[in-house]
Length: 578
Image 1 (cartoon, helix red, strand yellow):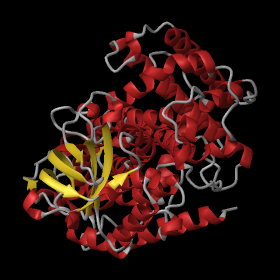
Image 2: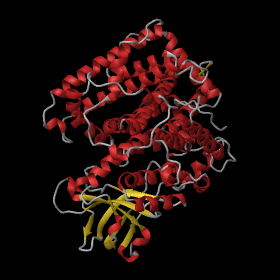
Image 3: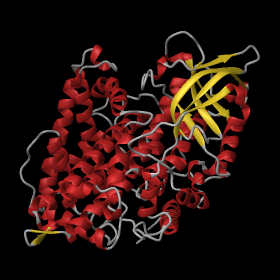
Image 4: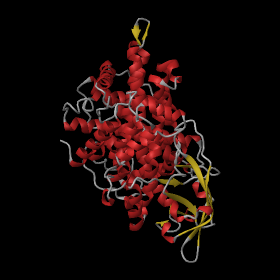
């Protein structure tokens, strides 16, 4: 039975999907045809932005207590997924940048700042965030942009920030700024600066950057020349910038990759349509074993990605002390899986993959747009660098010792408490998700061939965790830093795959525990879970025994059902317009 939160979430998703309409309809102003025209022109869809404004999408980024709709992070992901399935650039350009900026204020801002930011967003304004500088990349503790503190507590801004989404049209900016010339993490602070507070003679908006992907996004920069701003612009305390950024990253890293599943859903749907309609060698492309397997694997990759995304977003509410690791794992692995999936799908699509218009044009757009998500304000290497220093502590204090995560972590429709922003920790030394994997191995059913396969694969993942533990304990001090050896980065990669397997297993076990009702029949079936774990185990370099044929057949039949009934390829099986 749907809870109050779930009822509101499902209703909002349905409202947005209905308002945006059938993306395949050539007459739809926010359909694929018009979105592709805007992309070719290097602009965001004006009709798309108008539609999102009418839907008051900005309210999704404002907590309920400040008049918005932000109740749960996983719900935010589901809502934005409907936008991303049409246009990644529209999702990023209209609103997600505002979300990434606003999290800083919800986490550490004053009541006045929160109220003001809510006012800006709820009237349809935009907010941008500026962490990095081109000269220093992800090493933002070396940033040179200055906010010099004056005797009266105010600040003077000096220097440039580059590659900021919506810099030229934002009503306010969250600026990661150097407030002390000394080296170290306490030399930076975050300021919320409104455009109207800055003397226009002291600010230059830098020229727009042209990009290969998300071509409609308005990426430019800001150059301040001794611009004074009031003391009230400071978010949190002086010298707290690095800590605030890292805590905010935990929420955004957990959320944004899951939104991108919408684009991958569209890509898979496009290639399934091609495979069913295109005939080769007197058969449909779908009848060719390689094509059939590729499409089934792509469906599994979406389910794996959504399982990890679900755990990451729900951990913000339920396990905030552990979210540093889980958010980094989501931001690292999910874009990687989706990008690889798009490449595999492009092989099935063949030469049509290059077409930039018509029925297959949206695939070409999504394959250019999706890789941007692995960069952004925290690239893949930066996420691994967040995980690596925590591995030895987890190995000593957590793995094979912790209590397993609560069941609600794996239940998409279970109620959640408000986001406990103040409990987000930079590191905790605990990993309840891996503990759930270990705890589940002892009581997995083994009555059917699918359940036996699932049990064997879960044991393999647990053995992998044991190996990761042994190698983490052996890491040298040098290999626990951002300058670690490639072996340390590979270790972090393997660990994220184990976490993804634990997430899949948890989602399946909870679906099974609820009972195989019609709406949960597929997720409660061990066939998909076994096929997903098999895919992850092979990703780790192992060659497990062949799955029962029923596993791949069950996945294939579900893929076809969802395609024919126009339902999403994620955990939610959502009805889609069209």
